[in-house]
Structures are given as structure tokens and as C-alpha cells.
Image: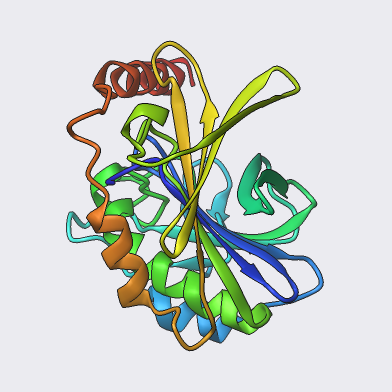
Length: 262
């Protein structure tokens, strides 16, 4: 899976999640408000530093976020990363608990959030402003997975990892074993326990009929960056997948219209 997937890690002190954008232009980590991850841990893994105000045509100087990367190789812009207990957007972190899909609300003022700055403002006049183009944000995906593992272990002992495909990874017909289907609040669910994992399908829409969440019981010792990366890379739904490109292209057009309107 390349874009749009989420990883939600259950710990003894709450859920820690990683969200990735369908456009490939954003990465976010959510973790409980009761814990505060040190700046040093974030800066070391992401290879960023504490940001200083930079040149801005409207205000003279502007501090866009808490951290920033070195200036990009294009010599235009930096990847900025923020870290706060207040975030503009809200998201759902899904985990499987006793055959039921649980929704843990994240973002806004419900969790701490570490996220890449959402928009691009860099230009020759502002060479240190945020640049959130996909090609630069995607360079941070593996770093965010490494940070996710370290943040989760900082929060508590690891209990399980839930991988949310956000796309049609499976359908009931392709699970390859006996499953249970039930309905709750107008949404269909399909659940199966298979080998060392649990799989939950949630009914979607005509374009994405089923969304997949897979739960793997793990410990702090068995959860590593390498294990997570291998799992994400191993998912290949090419045989049964829908084509997401029309939807992605729609989002890109909407983003371009927004930028032009600004």
C-alpha cells in the first residue's frame, strides 16, 4: 500500500496512530494527551530541528510550525512539522476489540498530534516557507513509521497493531475462510479470526465496497520498524482492487482550485 493507509497501535496507556494522506501530501501521528513526547526524540528520528522565524512577504518573519527540515534540494522550501495538543482536523483511529470495530477519535483537542504542515507557501521570495509537495512529504514516510514505533513504546507497553487499509484490500468472498457478517448502525461488518490475526471489513460505498482493518497481537519486543514496514509493503490488493486514480485526481483538482482561489 502506497498511500491512504493508517496504523493504530494499542498500548497499555492508550492508542497511538499514524495517518497518511490519500494525496501523499500529509503524515500525522496521534498519541494520548496525558503523555508528552520529548522534542529531542522527534527531531532525532525525523532529522528536523527547532524552527526559527523565516522570511515572509506579509509579516516580515513567520514561524510556520515547531520544527523544520533543512532547505530542500530545489533550494525552495522546507518540510515543516508541528507538534501540539490542538490540531485543526479530527480523524478516526480504528482498532478491533473482541470482534467489534472501535473508533478512537483523534486530532482537534482529543490527542497530541505530530504532523507535516498541510500547505505549500514556498517561493523564490520565501525560500524557507513550507513545501508540502508529495515528492518531499513521501521522503518522510519511513521516518514517521520509525517515530510511530518509538512514540508507542514511549506511551506504554505494546498490545497489538491495527493496520487500516482505507481501500478495498479484501472482500468477504476473498477472505478464504469462514466469516461472520453483522450490521450495526446501518453499517455492515465482516469479521474473521485467521492464523495470528483478526480481520474486520467495514462496508463502504460503490467505489470502495469494503474497507479492511487487520489486527496483530504484538509485544514491545516484537514490534519493530522493520516488521511494520514489511507488513505495509506486503499488502497487494491488485487482483481485487478498485482503481483509486480518478478519486485521487479529483482531490488534486480540488486542491489546485483551492490554491488558485487563495
